Length: 184
Image (cartoon, rainbow, N blue to C red; front, side, top):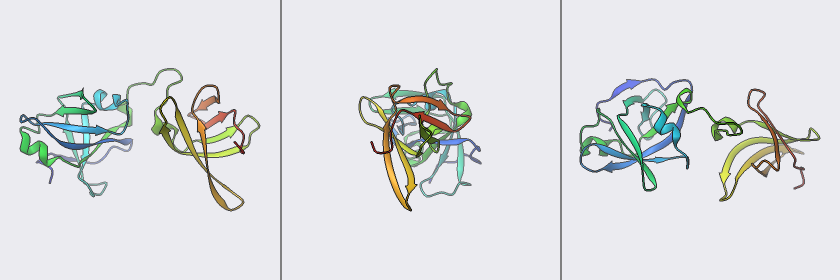
């Protein structure tokens, strides 16, 4: 059960960016496990939306964040609405959402993974290779995981998301052009 927080609707552009793991210390701080290795969205937004595990989209709460910082392999945060350890423990398992509009602006040739999901991928010859289902961090590079249907069967392709293979990312056009062949 979440502490007495202000109920709110999730913004239309809400993106899930992590979940609350546990309380941290005795003064109401809590640990957040981010879904990204680079959790800038958690730092740039001072307004988080929480959903209890298993709650419907209407079961959201607004949480004003006073401070969030990196700590070891997680993020720790505090809010005036979470005064002590007991209140922080009550947040355990809550999903954390922030509005996409509060994400920091990506630099040139930088993309948020969430913006790439669903984009069509074609090669230089115009052959449709599939749509981005997810991205994988594979150590030195990120890999696009594509799904497509060929001859009535669902297939999966993986394309390294590196400049040697990716010619262009057109977010408004919802298209990624790559130097990749279907049989690779």
